[in-house]
Length: 457
Image 1 (tube, helix red, strand yellow):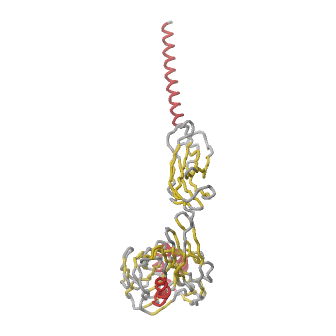
Image 2 (image 1 turned 45 degrees about the horizontal axis):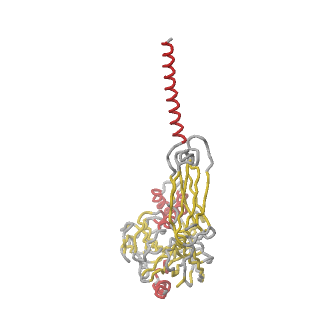
Image 3 (image 1 turned 45 degrees about the vertical axis):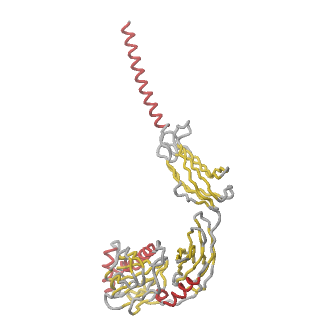
């Protein structure tokens, strides 16, 4: 009987241990599943240090364990505490990731309507997850960001502006914005042209070079605008007279020998071309041309802020072969198969003639580019660029500084060139413009230098 009781006791003890282990393991699992201790990750880094009339808060939050439960944002200024955003994410399950894994949103609010005034303000961001820690309230993360409320738009006064402009032409606006850091510039027909500080003892005075595309039929809108760090905007319209200009039309007859010479060159760089030689030529003259012009536009998006060029731009010596904005019809087999516009000036001299920089600047591109062949682009500062193409040799590399008339290469027949010549283009913030204006010393003086000298505040 004693043995039986002892055996029963031992079995009971073993069962208790097993149950204890099971319940202990279960408790650990439950704890890990429902009481995880990883707090949400949150960020207000994309939120500006300044808040304007229309308050804007950009936030992101994530939780890789139980998921996000709630987010709340409030603003504080003096005795004022105002909830600006509050959201609760629904439960999606009861195990694992219960709430949303991540959230990213832009919150907007009317600064004055919410009671905030100009001056310092604190933004507090709180995120909680679906953990049962914190007395079932979840892990939480709190981030504070100190900002400045500024609801006063910048002051803007136009000092000088362009009087006339033609399709393919360029102009300037000179304006004054006192005591504020702003993004500013001219918008013409919906295209923005940035402004740059003048310097030279003229603080808070800016210049914006702008251009009217060759195919513009009129001036729909023309403004100078300034947006400060808080997003407050000032817009000042101004007018200039639209002057129409004649544009030449031309017909180019394509020969089999020309196509047979050019297509193999393009095949090396664009192996995706398919079909007959004429199909591949058309692909180059259309699709590749569009790709090339997009690349050129991209190269103009981050111009040097200081003006490097001085005086008129020098013209390559030689005979003109094609003009700016010539409308070309391409004929093959007795019918027109394509139409394009020539966005530069072709000048022919002797074979492999020296190509010189038209003005001082920095090389931003020196490589092969489709229809342009071997091409060099120079940034002259404040949105002004020059382009040289079809070269047989390039003597410069991106990043090189060049002076006016520095030799940058030799003419050639690379790209869509039928004979040895230089294709030269001028661009203002990525818009192709008439080179003849920039070659003209009188135009430079009347359009740019005299207004600069006269602009005073």
